Image (cartoon, rainbow, N blue to C red; front, side, top):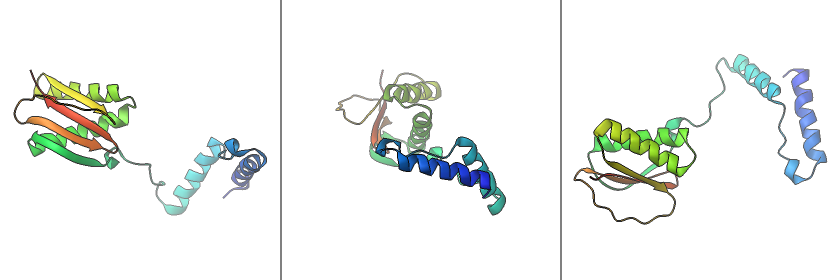
Length: 142
């Protein structure tokens, strides 16, 4: 580790130690992070591991009247939606529009942590699952 990098990290540690708790999470400057990553790459011969991949989301199937291939598509599209968006309505819109595009209208999608539902759906076009801690209800009707 270079002396400059050590000074940046030590300086950040001193700032954290001299401030109350809200500042205790102070990090080394971003350029220090880049230099540390570069030195790790040189030492290990490969880049440092990336953060969670888009497929790292845990899927828990709750109920389905849908072919397995289409369920897998719903899971994959949902993973992408959760990576691209943070608001539940935007996630639901993304999933709904992808299914409308891929399988024709009229799909409906509800995403959230706390909701009740009672729906009528076309045969073979219903899936209800959790992705991490949020529920996804996707069905075709109309």
